[in-house]
Image 1 (tube, rainbow, N blue to C red):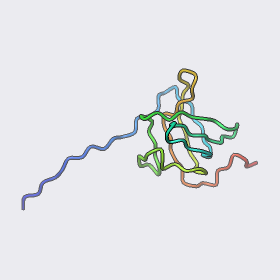
Image 2 (cartoon, one colour):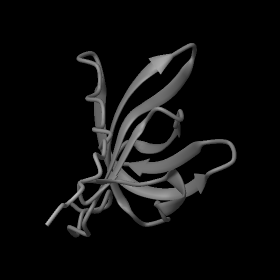
Image 3 (cartoon, rainbow, N blue to C red):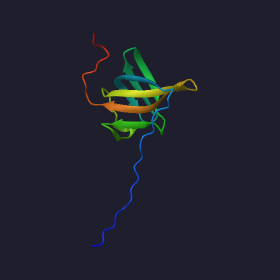
Image 4 (cartoon, rainbow, N blue to C red):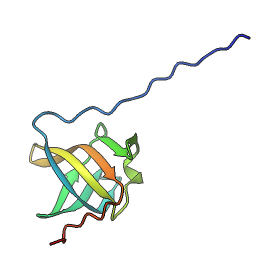
Length: 103
C-alpha cells in the first residue's frame, strides 16, 4: 500500500497586540463592503473598522466577516489607529444570555 498524504497549512489567527483594548457586545450591523461592524456595548454603540488581516473566529474556527449576523455576541480586541477604532480580533460567542441592558 502506497499512501500519499497532502500537506496542508492552517492559518492560525494572530494574537492581538499587547496594547489592545477589549470589549464585549451585541452586533447591530455588519457592512461587508465597507468592512465595518457596529456593536452595542454596555457604554453605547461603537463602530469598528475590520481590516482584511483581522482574525475572525466563530466557535474557535476562522470565518469570513459575512458570517457575522446582527444579534451575535462578540468579544473584540481593538486599538485606535489614525483616528479609527480598528478591530484586531473578533470572536463570536455562543449565545450566553449576555445583554447590555441587564441590571
